[in-house]
Image (cartoon, rainbow, N blue to C red; front, side, top):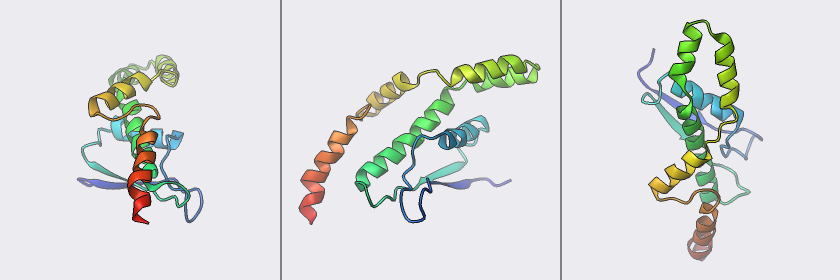
Amino acid sequence: FVPELLLHVSRGVRWDSDHVVILSDELRAIAEELVRGGFLDRVHIGLDFFDASINRVAAWVIGTRCMIKALLIALLEPTDRLREMEASGDHTGRLALMEELKTLPFGAVWDYYCERQGVPAGGAWLDEVRRYERDVLLSRQ
């Protein structure tokens, strides 16, 4: 009903902090709905990074990478196949495939994506953030 939508993604743990987005079931469900509904070109995703107890650059990287991972997992889902199964009444096959999808690894695709983007895969990015904190941020104090 609306041409575009602004989506604020957060993780409200306490009223004043701990809002950094993590790869939770809820985040994956949001990404699945965006992909399944074909809404990616109409939704602008904004993320919350506030957590006074951790490095702000790390919070930004963690939240952003988790949102991208959730979208990647959703994009890897065989949505057309699932729709075909549902339309043909093969609810057993659809449920079986949905359960199999839960254990399929996406890590290799994620690592390849990171490599293509020229960013560290896995936890190697944290070394860069800590180096930036030591060499740049601490010198500002």
